Image (cartoon, rainbow, N blue to C red; front, top):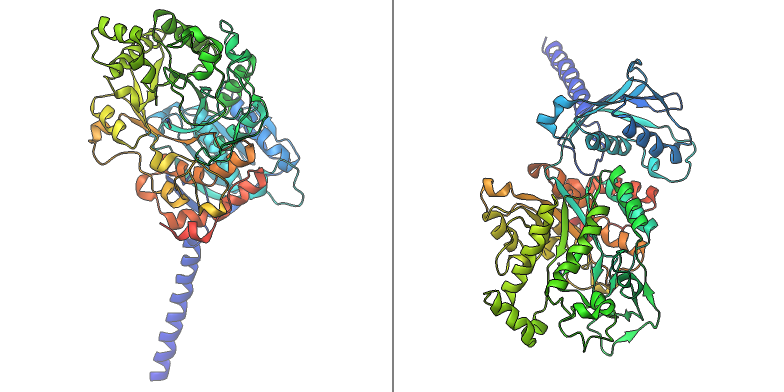
Length: 555
Ligand code: ACM
């Protein structure tokens, strides 16, 4: 009797355990390693197989995104999926649908992605959302799908999932710096491809600085004839003594045709290029071309674009002709870049020459201004009004707060979050870009093991922990924080491989800080997904910094 009972209990336990292990097997079905982490993902049972017979269904409006999906799969798969109209049966197909009704909940960049054994459906209220749905779909496939060369013997399986996703912030930016080291068009495109894969949507191009002017301006041809070329470049760190130079002429610039090509290449990947034209400081290359724009034209006749780093004292003289020059340049810039935001720099404008010049001092007095800071603020206001009249918005580094912020200005907060907090409290929009967490030109590991960098220390874990909304502002003020941006300043970065090394995997961490829900962020889980994700970077030929245990563990 007792034995019988024991047997019954034992059998019951075994059944219970097997049921439990079944359901835990279900629960443990591996979650695909998507970066950035989607808002909601439920992993189902089964897979969808993509083969040369798979069709892509799109209607007129989603057709462009369907073509991009097909194009993206061709290199690795070696076949082109056929397109079909919206009237086709969705079984066996990938369907892209624009669904205006999703705008309320997901915005124009959010999407839903349903993968079932017999179909895949991506829906969004906007073309950008469809594009991001496609980026996620690519990450659901084997990593080799990112290869630019045909891959043999891979079963292109997509696990069944149900994803609902949308970004936390609207400005998810990276900055590149062709002013310090010119970046050829092909390399900029390559950079944009990697950005798009990670759902970044703003590329700030730092087009002008003391060391070079990089954009053709028809009205001022000497900007590129003279200002785009420096005689040689510093070798090693700026602080190393004695300074050594490479003796090689360096330079280059984008023609207006090339700029148009880049803008449209980026737009096709839902990346807006934000041009940065520095004023009134970082102006040496301009004055080298047009000495009359300097404070001391007679002394500045033989000025040349700078051959080393740092901040030159050569600053614009804000005479009427100087202000007009800036407006003329911006007129051509606006014709090339549809970006609503036009970045005018405004940072690190040394006031030494303004202080030394009797002419500028008189200008300050005549305008009823207190000092040089107020003169800079007066100048920025002229440019703000000018851009606003053309339907654009001025954005500048946080120094534009000094001497009074121009009414329409948006602030890019780089010297910590302070500038951003002040601006948001005053009701201005803000993009966070603090040196502490977003300067990807800083070291990311022990200096003795890393290529030469400007300094600092910004490991992967610190980037991942970045929170763009400062505690010091209210929920209402936080609405002014458009997002954040990471900077790849180019003094010590001169090749695409090095740029990628500095950008990745830190940009993988950064995109998650900008896209994924704040509460879902978990560094351990991120690094575990990252170990899968780097296989995609490898397949795509992105020269990322290899993950190290220290980076995984240090928090
Ligand atoms: C900056 O790093 N000067 C904006």
